[in-house]
Amino acid sequence: MPRMDGYEIAKKIKKLEEHKTTQVVTASVGRSAMTQGFSSGAIAFINKPFTAKKFLTVVQTIIR
Image (spheres, rainbow, N blue to C red):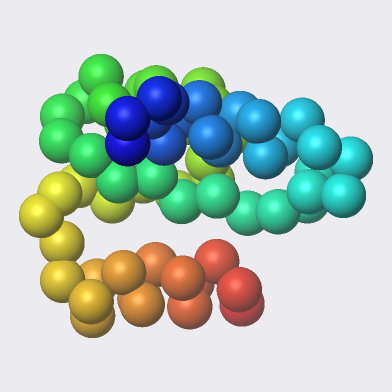
């Protein structure tokens, strides 16, 4: 993304009153990315590359 990364977007979403309970999943490569993802408000992290099946499994687990 040209102006901000996914972590910045996640932080902005979580600051909005109407999205305080919005659940965010981040995806990237490496442990530092995972830490940054959780610090930005994510409730789950997926290592890249990932399959659609893996993504759906994570989402299904979250919504249970």
